[in-house]
Length: 296
Image (tube, rainbow, N blue to C red; front, side, top):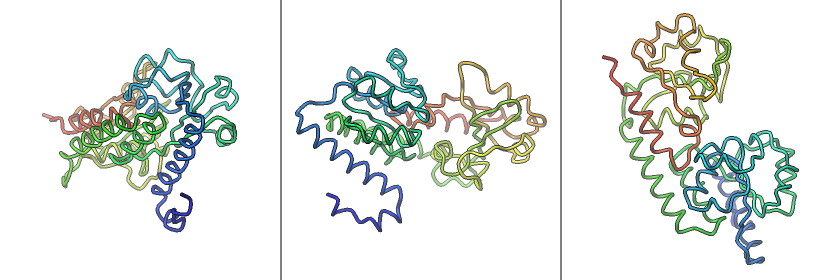
């Protein structure tokens, strides 16, 4: 299989490279399982969207642990937890004696991932592309690893169609609302999403445009900069421990923005909106409806 991959072409197209590498890893993983003739039954799922996919495929009984981002469905919280996906302990994961570890792209730290990859336990890293095709590929990769390809294909097609349909209302709009997504609002310190983020993709798919298009990834900005950007809508992550909308409303001058004047301060669950998994069609429809809400 290695001989069939054009590495020069992959280098020019990193997203394709990630999918090719994942498929190669999956092929090697499937080969090892076939040799043992035993399907994985003790799975550690790292990444909220991965856990959602496992549940959506009806394979949750195989899970022995999840990470802290796996907040849906509620039953996932009852499983042993290996910690935050970017601050994993390889020893903690391996102590659960899994026969498969599935992690979404971006899990870390790198040292822990290296230990997991070099262990005797099969490790599958799943690309995290923020698009209909990316979500479908994620579902297919997980489904193949679990041996439920047909079920995964049905789910992938259903979710991809749902994302396409949810994105249709915003297609071709020239007056897309300008949206600021605030990842965090702490003591007046703001972290906003720029290009290349899950939030940026969600905004565009829901028919909006990023209020900070020149930024890459997530960047800190001042309250003054947010007010100067004058977004038509502000989106924050809804949290159990506190209400971020109150912190936004406390920003000096924020009442002058179109977002506040038109009552488009939107709070949504982070995994629901940014996870890019089975629930993404619903999240995009909800965001699109709120962005198009009348300011009468």
